[in-house]
Structures are given as C-alpha cells and as structure tokens.
Length: 87
Image 1: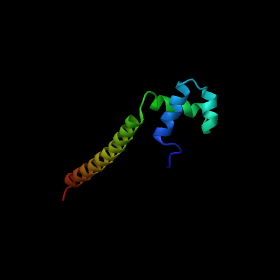
Image 2 (image 1 turned 45 degrees about the horizontal axis):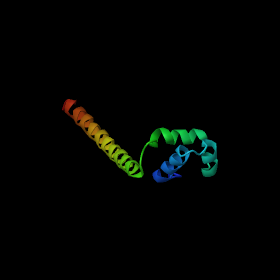
Image 3 (image 1 turned 30 degrees about the vertical axis):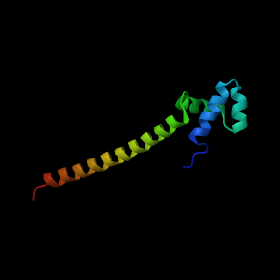
Image 4 (image 1 turned 180 degrees about the vertical axis):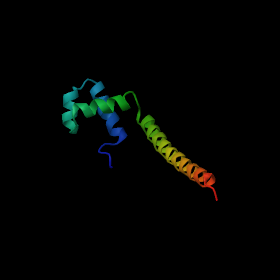
C-alpha cells in the first residue's frame, strides 16, 4: 500500500497546527479527517524528520526479523515432527 503522505509531510502538518493553526483548517487544506490528523499526531508528535526516517528503518528491520523468526520456528517444528516419527 502506498502511503499518501511522507513522514516529512506529516510532521510539517503537525508543526503547522502546533504553530497556531486550527486543526480543522490544517485538515481541510491537506484533505484529511481530524481523526487521521490526531492519529498522525500520536505517532509523529514531537519528532523531527530525521527521527521519522529512523523510526521507519527500525520498523522495516523489525518486520524482517519477525519474518526470519517465524521461518526458523517453522523449521524447528518440522524437524521435531520428523524426529518424533518412528521409522
């Protein structure tokens, strides 16, 4: 799924609102709902663009590690099943 906004754009929206802009005006200007804005704010609030890039990199790495762990667990289960069968 392609994200509609980059992390930098989301952080810019949050900073725009924190600088004194009304939330409704910011949401209307960018075409998002206020619920979406507050979801973004809870995730990216207080971050700088470099922090967001690091967060994205860590999330990607975490996903890869989870996938490797799942594959390893499947391999172990398969070996246990083979070992437990009587020949």
